[in-house]
Amino acid sequence: MITTLAIKNYALIEDMRVELNEGLTIITGETGAGKSIVLGALALLLGKRADLSSVKDSSKKCIIEGHFSIKNYELQNVFEENDLDYEPQTIIRREILPGGKSRAFVNDTPVSLTQLQALAPYLVDVHSQHETLEIVSENFQMEVIDALAGNAELLKSYQLQFADFKKISEELSVLKLQKEDASKELDYNTFLFNELQQANLKKLNQQDLEETYETLNNAEAIQEALSEVTKLFDDDQIGSLQTAKEARIVLGKIKGYSKAFEDFWQRLNSVIIELEDISAEVNSASENIEADPEMLFQINEKLQTLYKLEQKHSVSTVSELIEIEEKLEEKVNTTLGLDGQIENLEKQKSSLRETALKTAVALHAKRQKAIPELKKKLEETLFPLGLPNAKFQFELSASEDFRSNGTDALQLLFTANKGLAFGPLKKVASGGEMSRIMLAIKAVLAEYKKLPTIVFDEIDTGVSGEIANKMAVIMHQMSKKMQLLSITHLPQIAAKGDHHIKVYKEDNNEVTATHLQVLNQEERIVEIAQMLGGKNVSDAAIANAKELLN
Image 1: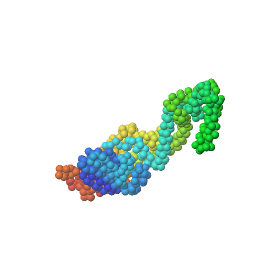
Image 2: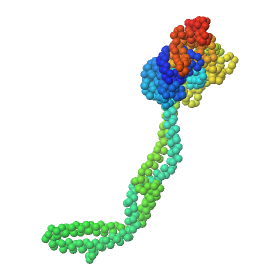
Image 3: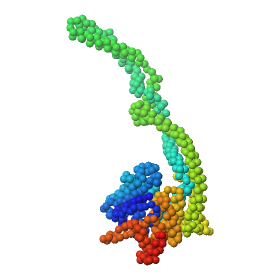
Image 4: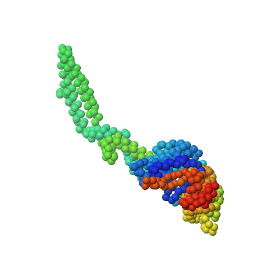
């Protein structure tokens, strides 16, 4: 319930603070006094978008603050789900800064409007005849049936199951789209992968292949050159080895005379050993070189394949081709693996669907059982409200599709008079009838559900006399289980309040301001007398007001 409402620098309100109590609080005032301003401030507090034009003095900050006592509402989970700090005495504050920027706070923690709007329905329910009535909403009508059916836990289970079903369905849709896109490229990627795989790239050394190709392609010239080198090394007359060996013999005769001559001999001896090794290897290479047209053809084929692949994939090395091959293999395997993933998700979806469907069937059965009781209570409540012939018809049918509250579709039909056919509520009920129907629904709901603070904005429009008195009785009865605020122009309803607040305008130094005044018993008598007979209060009006209050 709202315990305190404070408004500063908003519309015609300079600075106002009002304490609110349990039970039925009546709010009265002349047309234009500012009752709608109070509702506007309350709407901002509950998440409506801010408008700088509604600020009284745009050079100053506008602040609207509400204190809520919520310890009996079991809202801890709601706060947790919306990432809010829970306090049994919760304070909500909206600020509109001079620049037009708006800020919101819950228990002094900054919050988004989305968070505030998610919390609002659990705190205050504002009903105005001049707005689109939620009573024509199928979801609201289903909520009423579920309240009577005691479906809270079952509905919670279904919504968790439905959330899992939706999540799997979305994942499945994404995978199927991936498969559709991937399938278009699968054949091409498979072709590219197979082409690279057939080249057996990991066993190829491009440099070795190129060297072997050059060797085989020039075998005759290489063989001639190596033979010439062998001849130059080993020829008895001019061979380099022979000459070096003769020089070594000569140095050997004098190496004992000096360390320098010994070094010459050693160095020449090392050169001779190296030349002998080179000569032997050159001779061996010469003997091993021979033309091999078949091997030359095979190596040329491998190299041409390699060059084509490098050109095709715009790379220059085998390692880069191997990297591309691995990526293509991953793409192909991923695409082929999608079928298995899709099959697995299809099984999960089917299982979740079956589970949710069973819960939806149970919801449907309990709703069908609750409808006759709801119909009876609504018609009984409307009877004294001037609708003795009001009849309801609830058409509940299971649909093919899952919805947020089950698989049921609901149409609420209504007739207010005998002999007239049933029709959709929103088409056949007048504004005054709609207000009384809403009051009847809220009254029935109050028996089964812990409702938040309810604000009725002129719900009594279009009624008077005894019907207004009956409406007041119903409101007072409801207020025993919740906090109820009623903005009214009818004295019969005003007299039934536990508390009474008057909204009025006052001119001060050529500035008009709206004020709120909590009335005591004597002031209530005068206010109700004025509602009965105008500003010039007669003794008869005073007596009538006292009678209504008693």
